[in-house]
Image 1 (cartoon, protein in one colour):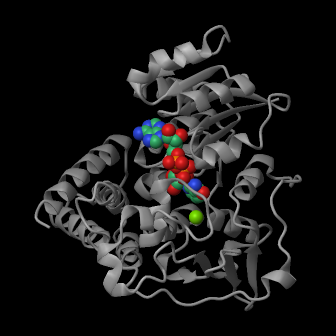
Image 2 (cartoon, helix red, strand yellow):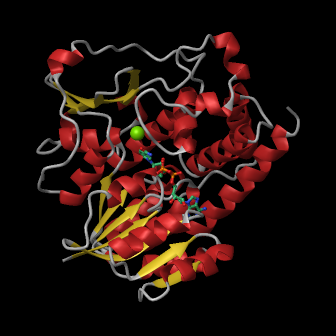
Length: 386
Ligand code: NAD
Ligand code: MG
């Protein structure tokens, strides 16, 4: 039986993953979560996990109580997360949100097997490092982002030299119809509502600002090894086409499906086979039309910043992600406005680039983590002047 671990099991991707698992078909090694101890314990019991880990040390007693008498080990904190990631598994879901997911992703690839990668931050911060570690240990990484799973599926049986362009779609997010002049007053609650997808709060706000799509452009470059000039995004409000690949003979392969992450998760779980999945089937006659338009750079400045990060390379991705996470924290706290996030990320990148600290011929984990911490400090410093 396949041994499975799910990191970030209590989150949106984590819960959609567990929805596809049952104790009879898989052996569950580790499940991890945060403050939702009741959910973590219930899932660990249902799936008969070996170990359940909460990220928060102070919640260990609660987790122990919830698992008392079950034989499931309870643990807490960063060290316990690493120890759990070191337990051999064949299929590892990396679905912690933010750069906190990087270390578990790096530990997971050491088992060989499959890394189902939802934590796009791992690729944005440290793509070359993660990919070289995966290659060294014979680990296959399968993308669990709807767009990247779509591209991956469109490329089955194709040769990369024939790819002219990859286009990932964007819904436009929760504020797409808000007049530009009102964006500065948008609240976290408004930005945290998505027209099509049900996701965690952070990625939902990142969808409204298009920082999510900006991250995904970088994720596409890293994962598929394509130059930035071959990667585009287009607004497609229905979120039914997730990505398209254009080939050198003019053909375009599009991937369509209902906006349900269980598709990308299930594809990564069953790969290279396909198996029945409980996701909605599209009724194209009812869908009737598919709309597209180019993103407005004034509304979505994050996309241009992502282009500069792709051109810059090195540790620019780590700075970009950390500054974006810091900006998002400040926006959620209402310390800065929605429209301050992009200028804050850009100024953080410019300031750190000017010190020459973004060059990295070869990247290692310490450099990435140090750059991450430094970029958060610089971003908070700059934000204090807003
Ligand atoms: P979420 O906020 O719903 O869940 C995050 C999970 O990570 C929770 O289990 C939480 O307890 C855990 N966590 C948070 N901070 C942590 C920390 N510092 N240390 C350890 N654990 C921590 O997030 P989500 O929407 O499920 O997103 C998870 C990842 O998947 C993100 O990288 C996101 O970009 C990516 N992703 C999500 C979706 C989606 O539909 N939600 C789609 C594509 C990609
Ligand atoms: Mg996506």
